[in-house]
Length: 390
Image (cartoon, rainbow, N blue to C red; front, side):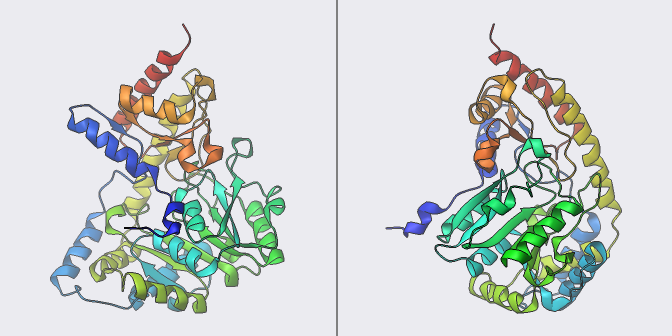
C-alpha cells in the first residue's frame, strides 16, 4: 500500500515502545522496574468498578449521544465550575474515549497547512506529532530547568507570529511535573487575547498537585471564548484502561468536536460513562489517598536521585513524574536510558522522547510502589557507577 505523505509526519509515544521492550525482557526472566508508562499503579476504586459493571448488567450497551450522556456532561460541567471557577453547562462539554481525541480533534479542527502552533518542549509528544500531521508548523516553547520547568512567559512573545493560531499549555506538566502559577497564567492569557490565539489547556493532572493552586486559563479575562480544557478520568481515578476523557469549550465549538466524534468513534462507551458519573459524584477519599501516596513517592525518588553523584533533580509540584538532570553522568539521554533498561532492569524514558529540549534528562514515573522505587534507585546508582571514568 502507498501511504499518504502525512503518515510520515506522524510521531509516536515512546513510553509504549519502551514498555514492549521491557515486557520482552521480562519474558526472558529478567526483573524490570517499570518507571516508563504514565499510569497510576492503583486499582480503579471499587465503587467506580461496580458502577461500570452494573451499567453493563442493566443495558447500557448501546449507542449514545456523540457528545456524551447529558447527565455526565452536566456532572463534568459542575465539577469544573466548582474546582476551576468556570461557568460551563452541558453544552460546553464533549466526552471522548480518553483525553487524546480532544488533542486530535482540536488540532484538526483549527489548524491548516501553513498555520503555526506553539507547544511545550519537552512536552507530551502527541502535541508535536499532531501539529505536524495536519501540515501545520510546530513551534517549540522551551521548558527549562532554570525556569523551574514552567513555560517562559518572557520568551513567549518572541514565538508568536501572524501565523500563530494555537497555543498549547500543560499544567501540571508531563514530563517535568512543572506547574504554572497564577501570574504566569495571567500573562499567557493577555498574550492570547492580544494576538487572537486559541489555547488548548491540558489539565489532565489538575488533581495531582502537591503545593500551590491549580489555575485554569479559562477563568482569565477574555479566555472563556478562546480556551479548550482537556481533562479526563485516567490519572485522577486510576482509569487509564477505561478510556474516558473530555473537553470543555465554547458551545459552538463543542458542536464541531461532536461532529468529529460522529465521524470517528460514534460515541464513547455508555457503560464507561456511567462509571465516570460515579467517579465524579461518588466518594473522593481514594483520590486523596492516591495523591498522598504519590507525594511520599515523589519525596523518596527525588531525595534518592539527588544522593547519586552526577544526577540532580528538582522536586516537582504536580503529576507523578520526575525529570532528573543526568548531564553529570557523561552520557546522552537515550544511550543512558537504554543502558538502564538493558543492563540494570529499570525502564525509564529519555528526555528526548519529549522533544529536543529534553536532552540531558530522563523521565521517570513514580507511579510505582516505594519498594520498587528503592530498587530502581539502587540500580540507577549502579548504572551511574558503571559509566564513571576509572
